[in-house]
Image (cartoon, rainbow, N blue to C red; front, top):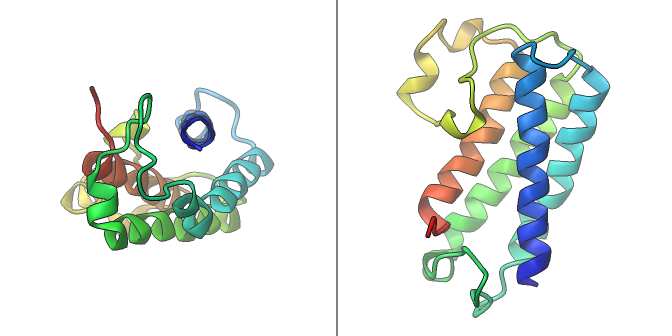
Length: 148
């Protein structure tokens, strides 16, 4: 179980890195590739993700903190947010990216930072959704992933 979820999280990281690279022009923007990446994340998020974390499955080499099982409701909420925003990204993939994203997906966060650099209203749907996908991952990592 631990190996399966670690591989899934590594795959999500590869996908969001590719999406951010396309939105920054480092790779040619390909709406179909964005849609496929977002759909793959969506399919692995939500309830599917939470089933990968049965209680007591934090043995080495797991990076999961015990906090997941102490506050499973918050963990589940973030997994569902990831599912929702990746679905939105898949839906908005046809829209050419317009707006500012942090260079690295790991720097996307919810809150006031989203208002900087052009404001939320000037973000295209795909950029707005990509930001939220990354921010959901980052919020979960900050709360529930050990960086040892």
